[in-house]
Length: 282
Image (tube, rainbow, N blue to C red; front, side, top):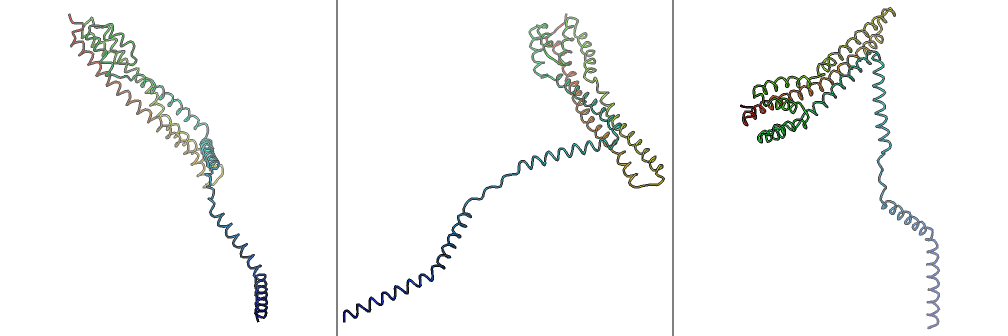
């Protein structure tokens, strides 16, 4: 009986094992596909998990675009300059260059003429209070600007009395004012001249456009529009030049007015100092 049971058990084990093996063999392709799919999925997840490289800014492209923009503006400006008749546009450009050169010269001169007036007056007053007129004159010699020059001329006649000093200060103040305003009239000339030259170029361009219409024997919109466009370019350039020079001119005039006011106030202060400390009084 035991042998029969053991035999049945062995037969059952073999049968179950065979069926399990056969079932596994049938499932191998599916399992392989599943493994491959799982591998592919894990690889995709790994790829997605990796940080994407940041897109670098196209610096070279931006620089090239800026260069192209600058080149385009320059070429456009040259094109418009040529279209507006180089002769008249060149004259307006010369007027603009000369006017700007005069403006720069005046601005530099006026800036060099400006000083710390309060400190200068305090130093001169301290020297006059001590009775050291030569020391006050030395301070004036070592200081630039019209105020120091006026003070030096006034102190040079301190022995002649306050009235003589006052007359000297007024007279020499007029000289210094003329030096400050030197060249301003030329700037105003170029301010008026630039748009006039532009208008002249426009008128001549219109005349040439009408002459071309007469030669063609018909009014062509292209001819008329092209001639008017070319003629008006000189006017635009002349007005732009006048606007630029006018801005510089107003700054220069304001600067001159400020320095002149300081000169007048300082001259009054000098006379008051001499009266206060009794310089030149007998």
